[in-house]
Image (cartoon, helix red, strand yellow):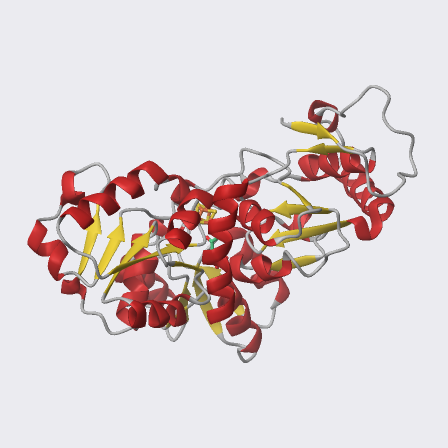
Length: 378
Ligand code: 13P
Ligand code: SF4
């Protein structure tokens, strides 16, 4: 685990650990109750010097400690609303913590309680591949092209978009961001989620025939020069390993099982699933739709399991079920466990900054340009 020792901006009420940084191994045998109590105690001790942000896909035993919960967009906005917090403990995945670092104040430090909490989709687009793809397209003489990256991407790719007059979007604001982008340029290159790109393009009225997929392992992404010249949307071949598993047959099966059930899915699902669903939207949208639905209504929800289970518990007067019976949670979101959170907070309380996520100045500056454009447009 990466660590730095910092002078805390406040006086910790415990003696600084003379033995140095506390080890994660010492937390693995603690009981649930001990972990809960120690997390709460460390939070009290850190007071307003810490803020804990939790994505909606986090497990219940993490969400219960969060000061704010939200989807990627809401958490990006939250990152700079607590300027007095020296530490932003991000219970989510790596790209979210990077965005929080970029958007937060210079004096703030962002902590990811487990550095292995990455995102398989974000990893499907590497900056070198994106730069090579951009060059190949430019060599064909295609110039009227604007890059847009989904929030679920590295800071380097956000910076690439910032440098090329592009923008970041989330699943909450993809439609207005596409609207803005298509007023800037005729064509869009969308990274790294093929499905969100296609689903948003369709919402925006772009025919499927005017969309091509860019496979980074193939020359010209697996397309002919003519296909690329005719396309309005070039979609990077990336997908979410959770949402990508929902299939059209899951929609049919749920409808057969519960006649009249409403199907509500996240736009990271395949187009074939989204087009069969009644509604689709970001995790905030899904939460709002279920909350506002009448008692007795029935919902099959195509998104991450922890969120669906929580919604089912919070709304016992409605039937809320996962769209597919046999799908699992997001394994990387799940890596943020109470053991990691307790370890991170107790180290902070003792003056040790562990697992800091810090984006280098140059990419941070350009990524901020792309993120600020998003925040201004939305
Ligand atoms: P949102 O938070 O934008 O709904 O995205 C879902 C997701 O998969 C985050 O990793
Ligand atoms: Fe990445 Fe999908 Fe997990 Fe979100 S749910 S962090 S997109 S793998």
